[in-house]
Image 1 (spheres, each protein chain N blue to C red):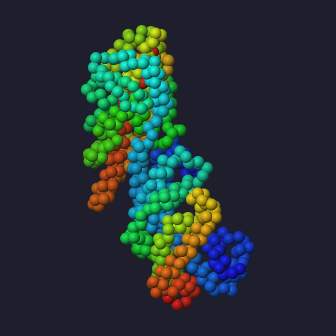
Image 2 (image 1 turned 180 degrees about the horizontal axis):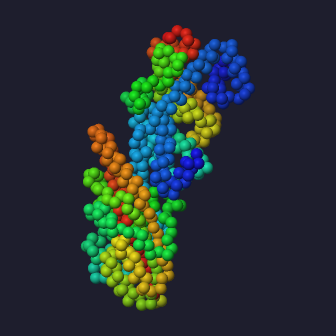
Image 3 (image 1 turned 90 degrees about the vertical axis):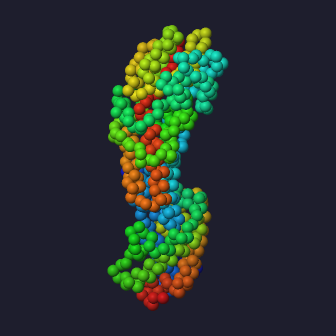
Length: 358
Length: 205
């Protein structure tokens, strides 16, 4: 074997990757060729240098926290399809209603202060009416958390489970991380993201001001789907509105259809978690229950974990004077804060999709 | 290994704490690789973070029979090549103090190593690092995977999505460039082919 060939094979030979016949030839050659022995020394030294470097380099101590702090941000920009199945079914129902109803005049107005307006959601083209007994802010479906976390003690998800058919949280077959973002909004996604200041942004606030109360208390995001067959549609509808008003719920009509054979209407209701049980119980008395499903997303553990991350970042912030680093930490904290607030808000309320048909 | 598979499975179901465990498990390896690929700590941290974030997003596509660490390496290498990361010459590999533990010599001094030898070794390592930095991203990536991470040619071909022949010739060219560069740096330092003397106990330059 010639020097040139040998020298080309040396690195592989050193790593035990040369063929047996090559290895034998190289060894023989080494015995008599000083130039190639130098080459061998050279590659041995290079290999040692490179490998020793790999062993001595460690990730910085806060590395994992830094990665995890960025993951909720990625979540929010992902596809919002947690309750995809429901969303699809609601969208299909609405599309059907629109086709058969034909005109805006077919929409039944519920209540006196209902303001009709155009929905922005691409899944539900057409008119949507919204009823908001609490505030004159049709753009806000979900109550503003206000002082943030102060209503936590009211949240007792254990008793808000009206479903006989509780299922595992959605998300097993979906992109992870999207399971809790925006799933309760089949009809008014735009309103929720655009109309409320704290959700999803939070960067404008000093993150240190937000206090996390009851970080360990149970947080569950609950969604219920209820389909009822009623005898007298108008009477049932009136009664339903009364129940909704009494429970302080807010709702919007996702679609209404009137035909010779009967009427069907779909509502999206947002109600405080502690009222859900009573409300759903009452609604069930309005007619025959055709379908009743609920979905629970337990977010307690994740919530707690995020609060811990937040606190870690907070102490890092206190420990550093470097302005760039402080800025980065604050951005990370704001992102965590936004996610926590969104969860807080969702956990305090439940979403009920009600379908009445006669 | 089974533990990491379990954690991957949990992470795929949206368990972020399981994913955090995975990050902790692999962070040193990915960070070291990122450092080798980028040549400085600032870019290494970005690359390593982006690797994990990308991995998180791509988790649904990950088949759990594959090795998670290898998959992460693949993401890191491809990110570094695709992004053609900017070099920062001011924070460079040739800085002798690059570990976070402070002034540690690269070459661990063995019992038989004299202070002079230790210094030489350190100096040589510095040259290797500087030379590595002079390579193109592609050449550096294959060398890092082969020499530092110990991947086989086949594995590298899969990682970089190119043929075995391409990998072999690329590694060959990378090695030649590296050697040329080290020789040049040695000459600059007034050392003629330092490796000649290193293993012989001969004169020290």
